[in-house]
Length: 113
Length: 143
Image (tube, rainbow over all chains, first blue to last red; front, side, top):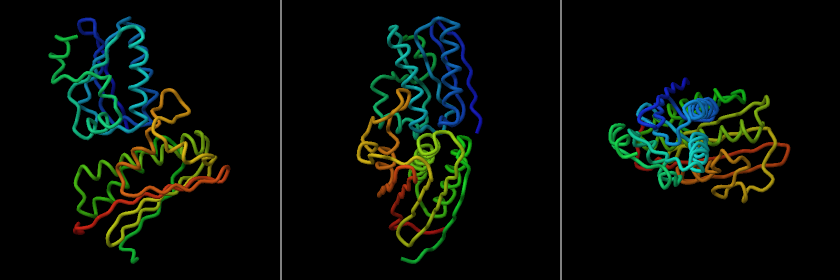
């Protein structure tokens, strides 16, 4: 199980593209990659492109919640796009969609943020 | 009730094995005509149970996790056993948002409960925990 994470800065938003299965095995790697990028860039908003994520469980949700907590105290917004249906279902059930804004595409998200 | 098929696995308590357990249980579920969505639900439930064993049962230390998958006429059953720390208060641990770690959501048991038809937890402190989950296969045909 390998997780691929690429982070880039787009219009003052940290764009995080993830590929893999977001479970306990990769949770720390994901957390460190996003936290390092937040520190390096100094931005507050995060946009997750989850197109390549085909599985998430409560460990993955926990690490998303942790990043949300981190940026929201600074006034940052967490948003996501391209979520696969089975992952969307888990996000919905967990209540995380109350704090993560959904967009149809990266372009739409970056225009709105 | 007659057993139609059974697989027993033993894995070391390692985070990289959680994905292997997940894939194996999904492959076993695919022997029955579950929908893709139902197989996803089983993957999440098993992932939660095995993760719990690694994180809480063995607290990331060495240990053995047993996984027993059984197919009956009308249901599929997954039993996940660890011989770790055990759960002192099962009712408390089952509450949604109960977690000992701020970066965790405490939704493990809630997911197992909502994605499976039955969830039974037996635990003894310093002896270990057994999680038994059942999903009904009624009206489903076998491949």
